[in-house]
Amino acid sequence: MKNRVIFFASIIILIMVLGGILSAKYIKAEETKDSIKLGNKYLQEGKYEEAILAFQKAIQVDKKNIDARVGIAKAYISSKQYDKAEDVLKEAMDVDTKNPKPRGELVKLYILQGKEYLAAQKYEEAQNSFNKAVELSKYNPLTYLDISENYVSIHQVDKAVKILGIGYRETKDEKIKKRLEELNEKIRKREPVSFMLNNTNKPPIGTGLGEAINNELWVKYSDGKEELLVASRDDEDMKNRIAEIHDPQLTLDKKKVYFRCLAAAVSDAIHVVDIETKNVHFVCYGNYLKVIQKGEYCGKLIVNQHRYYNEGGAYDHFYIVNEQGVEIKYLGENVEDLNQY
Image 1: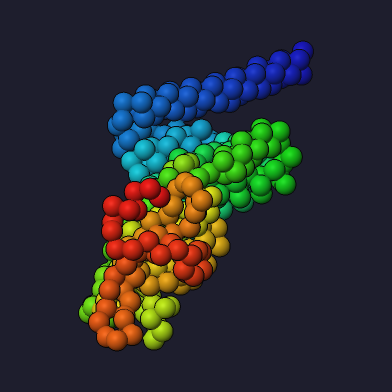
Image 2: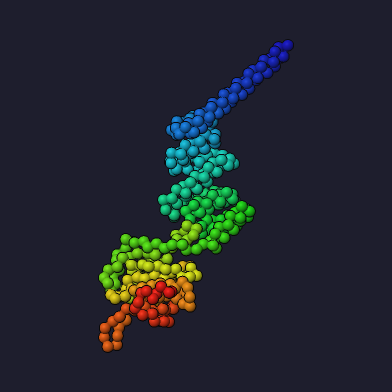
């Protein structure tokens, strides 16, 4: 009888102990849940410091809670404390190596930083951030698609294609393949639509007319991309010297651009640049430039050149020349005669 009493007493004690443990766990879980709920509420209200305190309280109760750590990181991200957010997410990855949430949020953080660097034209920093995102999410197609669209948004379609190419090699994802095809088609249809002359802070360049502006010729394409074509440069040979670029004109096939720059005291120099290769070469001297748009001499150039009489004296007349600057036809000195071309 005595043994039975002891046995039942032991069972009752065990039940009470287990009940206490379960009750404590339940209370602990509820406290954690309430703190996380409060933290999320503060996040939505933009009260980031209060949110961090609430999430930290949850961690004090449950040291391995990942949701609370992710919540802290989100609060830091929203208040643009990216370094702190990165540290918290890396720590969360160490706490629970199998939970995908911290890794996913860290990828989002790196892409966000990359986007902001792009907006600030800090392209190297942006690339570094995107590379970190890819390292963490190498086989996730959405990472590559997200990064590529950030490049598309600033008209850097070529870089978008590059990152998608890497993504397709790693994932063989059909969505990436489709977007690659769309962007490659966009590049294929790309055409130059306008030109810009941008002055630099570099020293002026000496010419026969004195010091000339050190500037650059840029092209803008139909997809919004802007690209440097020619930069001013000094050279002992006047035919290779490029200074104070002006009067850019597109060839009829839209593959090259003619332009004038200051050269001799009595004449500009005319050059041509290949849009794709960026190769530049001297065409001829001339103080006027027009690409002929129609007729027998379509695609050829009208130039005005300063020439000298054998017996002395000089004159400035118009000529049609070919792409190498060789004279094809003499037009005279009357500007009105040029209208027929």
